[in-house]
Length: 150
Length: 200
Image 1 (cartoon, each protein chain N blue to C red):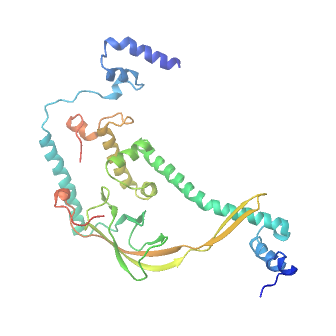
Image 2: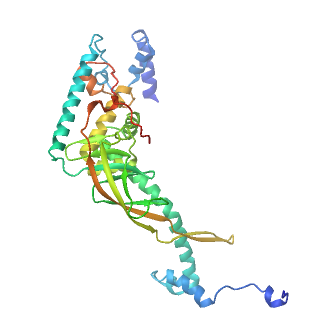
């Protein structure tokens, strides 16, 4: 049996006003000034905050990636190697550590990081990457032109 | 621009001296010729003797490492492992967090095989890209499987009557690293050994 009378066509207003507002006020409880107490202001700032939080989860990942890059770059600068050359040298030596690991190593395992820089620089010199002016240390010692190490 | 023009003029002037393009590029370089170190290497050099000497040097390093491990003086090892598409720097006793769906259940003991790098106080083993299977054993236990806190996914467009809200929780797994050990001596010619049947 279907009722087609007028009250059923009225738009439902959702839950009771008190509960609807309380959900928002709970989220706004720690805000300052009228954004805490006045619903019109509270809902504006809560919506904005939630939208920022959603976007921020992606931004956090990008920020971390940027931070790791900066750290690895600083680690390379200690040894006078550019970041691009360092990464290219590592990749060509089949060392596939990511930026996060390299930055961790640069901070907490400086001696391991120095070894990585040396390997990368040697490879860059042997392969003749444009950034490296000197010949590879190994080849200078033995007076070779470009012996490939494997 | 004037700097470039000057160097181009220089190259033109030097064409008689440097016939090859290579020489021209060298003349363009800003760094002084002394720094470039392009001395031709002597061609008559016995490469095999050098290779032998080189391998002897590597052998001595390996022996030093093996001696230290035999006397168990190497201290606590750390390792970089590849797990679920991420790399972790771990040491025994650590707890690492794997995000997202991952089948193992609580209490499972697993060994992490993709070891990219292992190090101690005095040496570092670097894999290309991973160390040979069986060289370093990393044992771990799954200790907890939970969900993340509720993340609110909220989108809104102003003046467009558009608003979406979703709530999501993704699975998280905690793993404790039990031990990291060097299980067999480090060898120089490990690459020449018959290829293992294990593939990654």
